[in-house]
Structures are given as structure tokens and as C-alpha cells.
Image (tube, rainbow, N blue to C red):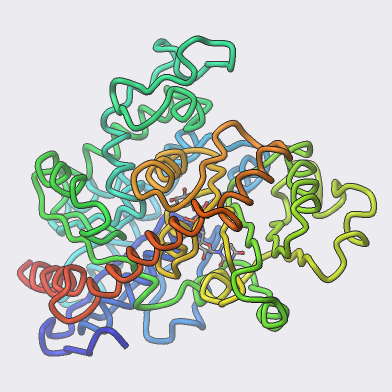
Amino acid sequence: AILCSTQSTATRRRIILFPLPFQGHINPMLQLANILHTQGFEITIIHTQFNSPNHSNYPHFTFKPISDSFFDIESQLKTKTDAGYILQYLNGICEDPFRDCLAGLLAEYDEGSISCLITDAGLYFTQAVVDSVKLPRMVLRTSSLACVLSYGALPFSSENGYFNLTKEDSNYEASVPEFPLMKAKDVAKMTTNPEAMGSFVTKMLNQMKASSGLIWNTFKELEEDALETICQDFPVPSFTLGPFHKYFPASSSSLIEQDQNVLAWLDTKAPKSVIYISFGSVALITESEFQEVAHALMNTGLPFLWVVRPGIVPGSEWLEPLPEEFLERVGDKGRIVKWAPQQDVLAHPATGCFWTHCGWNSTLESICEGVPMVCSPCFVDQPVNARYVSDVWKIGVFLEDGLDRVGIEMAIKRVMMDKEGEEMRERINSLKEKVNVSLEEGGSSHQSVKALVNYISSF
Ligand code: UDX
């Protein structure tokens, strides 16, 4: 264990945590809860019934489900990826049940025994609720720092034209003046509903500023410049104690069962020979993109482990859109599963490349195992992350023009076979070293944990 238990520091006060009900947000929130528990805090998790975490994996926590009616969201998630709309809707319907739940908790525990509430940054409505009962709120932001800077800088409006660009537009490839690292075509990928996204982002950023402090799943050495800007822009303390999965793995908060058989299959493969493909828990791809992926994998001839989450291709149950004879042609060279033990796969010596949608958890998990990436971002923070991976840290190749078999094959070969890929591997291994140093006694993330515990204890 990286953290020693220091029960005395916090005198066993209670922290209430409330995650956004999506895999990429639940994982870091429950990891943070575990980190705080080792530091001597009691933990209560408020959660929606939609995507409920598995209580039995956390006998040391208390859980409070709030009532919700999410059938609407579930069906929308199958076809739409309009995060701005869905997140605002969630903020609306959670408000009353959350207020009641919090009032119940305040009545249940002695006065002063609850230190604070920690919510996902996306649950901005909670700030007004805690203000009315005078409880401090800390915010967990589960993305990179750079993502928040891009959200603050970019004009989310259909008027500026970024969000309805096509390849034919002259500025499609140009960098955007508001956030020059990104090209207009990257910004276009972030949302299909810029007004909803802009309205959500404004509320989230305002309520982050109104909070008592910000907790980030990143580490200082990875995003040093961005951290400086964040500290200037947000007038509350920031704590960068990530990557959280290095303290506690994501497997115990997995909402889908992870297929453990893949590890024995990886054991049969040569070192760094396998491409691991996963686009996370919410991204969707079209049937023709799915087929391009399959053709590209056949054409590279390299072994692969492909996570096809049921529902990733709207309108299909699972593997129906695969090209004919795909499975016979691939044989034992390829493995397709519904959900994988991702951290173990990335840590396996046979894994040579991660073709990812660049969700922030996936990006961090890849960095921590020194696995270079091919990036196919779908929306929200993913295009920013992909730009950092390819242009800033130079640890991967960005498939910036979408999924076509020729482009995919070239990108994979650049990472797996070219000298350029070797250099990416060296750079990502050096970041991996930096992560390890930051987590050791005296390292930046380790110090940040201590600073956070002291800060919360001062409430
Ligand atoms: C979402 C957003 O899409 C992402 O951009 C944002 O940064 C966080 O919220 P998601 O798309 O699910 O998350 O991606 P990601 O952040 O990468 O999180 C996925 C998590 O699921 C990771 O912790 C990963 O280890 C886990 N996972 C993924 C599995 O356990 N098995 C799998 O097969 C795939």
C-alpha cells in the first residue's frame, strides 16, 4: 500500500461523497473515498440507483441511494451522446432527492461529525444545497486540468461555426485562437449541442469557483503549466493527488463484469505484440466505423484484444455487424470481449499499444503502465486529451480524421513497429517513472494527500 493508515489525523470524522453515475466518474470517486478512508475518515456514499456501485465491494463504507427515475437517461444514452443536455437533466432531477438525503444524514450524525461533502464537478447544483445548510463542499474533477482550461476558453455556441464544420471548410485544419493546441475539427468533435454544453460548462465552472476546494485526478509533473493557470483562475485550493488508480484499482467499482480469461490468453502472446482496443463506457461508433476497425485489425495481422461493449454500435446487440468470416480468419490471433480488466491488461507484458477513445481514466492508466496509444476521441474531454497525448507528451498517434482502415493500420504500425513508436515508448516510460516518484513519500501527489487531509480536517 502506498498510503499508511493515519487514523489519528482525521479523528474519524465523516465525509459524504456523491459521484456522477457514469463509470468514468464512479471509478475515481470511489478510489478517492478509499484514499480518504485510509487517512482516517468515515465514508458515506450518496448515489443514484441508476448505475449503482456494488455495495458489497465496500463493506467499510455506508451507502445512501437516492430515488431517481432514469429510464429516460438509459434509453437516451443508447442513441445520443449529448453530454451537456444529459448532465443538466441529471442536475435537475437529483436536486430534491439529494436535499432530502443530505438533511437525513445531518440529522443522523452528531453536529460537527460531518467534515464536508465531495461531489463530482458535474453535479453543480449541490453547491447551493450545502450553502443552505452551511456544509463545506469540495469538488472532484475527474478530467485533466487542461480539459477544464479548454472548457473555460472555448466559445460553446453554434454561431462561431466550429460545431458544424465539414472537411470542406477552409479552417477545418486550423488551430483555434481560443485554445491553440486544438484544431477546429477537434473542437467540432466535443459536442453536437454547443448551447447545452456551454450552459452546462458555465454552471460547472462557476460552482467549482464557489466551492471550498478542488481535487484532481492528475499529478503535478504531468500538467505543471496547466496547474499554474488553474491556481490563478480558481480562487480556491487545488489538490493534485492522482493517479487515483495507483492507490486502489478500478475493478471493484466496475459496473460490468470484467472478463478475466483474457489474462491467460495474453500469457500466450509475445511481449509488446498485442493491440488492446477499448473506447470506454459511453462512446458510440457507427456500424461502418465498427467494420473499418475490424478490417484494419485483420489487415495489420497483429494479435489484438478488442473490447466491444454491448450497445457500442447503436441498433446492434453485440457482434452482428462484424464482417463475414472475420472470426474464422482471425482465429486465436484476436480476442473480443464485452469488458476487460483494463488495468491488468495494460500492465501485462504482452500489451504493446492501447487504441483508446482517450477518456481521462484510460489515458492515465496507459501512462502508468508505459503503453503508447493510438487515439480515437469521440467527444467532450477526449479530443483535448488526444491532443496532449500526440502533440504535447508525444506518447501516441492521433487518428484525427476518423476511422478508416488504411489510416488505422498506418497509425497502429507507427506505434507498434516504427522507430517513432520506440521513442513514444521511451517518453511514456519516463512519465511512468514520474508518476511513481510523485506517489512516493515526499513526492507531489503524496504531499497533496497530506495537504488535503489537513485541509479537510480544518473545516
Ligand atoms: C467518461 C468520459 O467519456 C471520459 O472522457 C471522461 O474523462 C470520464 O468519463 P469513459 O468514457 O468511460 O468515461 O472513459 P474512461 O475515463 O477512460 O473510464 C473508463 C474506465 O472503465 C477506466 O477506469 C477503465 O479502466 C475501465 N474499463 C474500461 C474497464 O474496466 N474495462 C474495459 O473493458 C474498459
